[in-house]
Amino acid sequence: MATTASIAYDVSEEIKCQFLQNPANYITKPKSIKIIETHMSYVFLDDDFAFKLKKSIHNEYLDFRTIELRHYFCEEELRLNYRLAPDVYLSLIPLTLDARGALEFSGTGPVVDWLIKMRRLPADRMLDNMIAMKQATQHDMFRIAACLVQFYKNLSPVLITYENWVSNLEQEITRNEKILAQHARLLPQPTVKWLCAEQRNALVKWTTWFEQRLRAGRIVEGHGDLRPEHICLQPEPVIIDSLEFSAELRIVDSADEISYLALECERLQAPALALALIENYQTLAKDRPPPALLHFYQGFRACLRARIAIHHLDEIKFSNDTKWQTRALHYLQLAEKHHLAIKSTMEPAL
Image 1 (tube, rainbow, N blue to C red):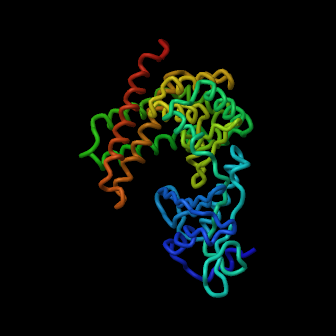
Image 2 (image 1 turned 180 degrees about the vertical axis):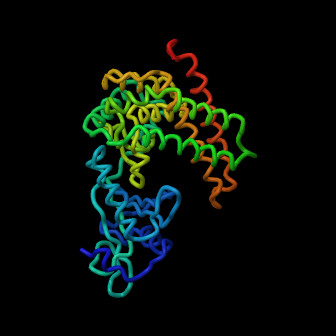
Image 3 (image 1 turned 135 degrees about the vertical axis):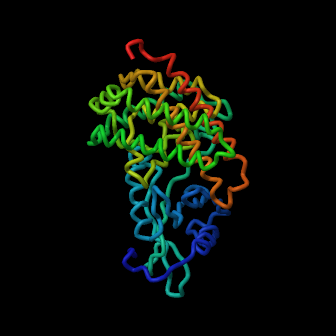
């Protein structure tokens, strides 16, 4: 097989995408190829498989600008997703040039990029779609919780100091506030400042709680981006799209990650399912952190998602798309709701 050492040509993303959109270039000769563009990749879908091509991009969290880096993070994506979706993530495929300089799959010529080959999952069984169709049930939440509890049980606790872990949280709060403040015309800044101040205060006031989570081994290298659109409700739940580009962002409290998924269910107008998920996790994992801490995590995650949503407006193609402002505002409303709920759940001693 060709290797990255044989790189000799620079082929544009446009040419790669043109090649990958043409059904005639695939061995199985599908009738059509569907393309999905995300902020970090292009995904090309035939009848049975998906082929992901990472974009050559760079930001504060990731660097995909060279083929060596894209190859590395493709390998990381396979490694990490094998944990929760071993039958979905199949292999890496080199995109190569033939003797005429034309693109081909898995040739012996120079490698110009790498593709992740995945088995397609049924779109109608993804949790976000099932929630939208009102087909997701509380038993489904039990099955998801059971899958995740076993996942966390199999992980070794992350060897991180309390200071470093809390510092990571504080840095994200600062990033949230900075990005949200850059869109002061679109977002309520008094709310943003209050939320971030409350989160910083929690890091100071709840030292004991955070230390207990660390001592209990609840800080793990988790999924990193646990959302309903990444969960397929097969007979055994399949969870895809583990965050591959930042180990720091994968280091989470398992209860934080569960709370994040519950928050996303709540955003999709399924609060009963959100509650069922948390309750099933707590029972199955025998892990009952203070309710106020769960609300903190959800408020923190909601601010982070608001930041990601509003940050899309800085991209030319999304600059006039009102969807992202609406979504950011919704996340801020959820963050405010959860931080206001903290007062009603605090133990008298605190």
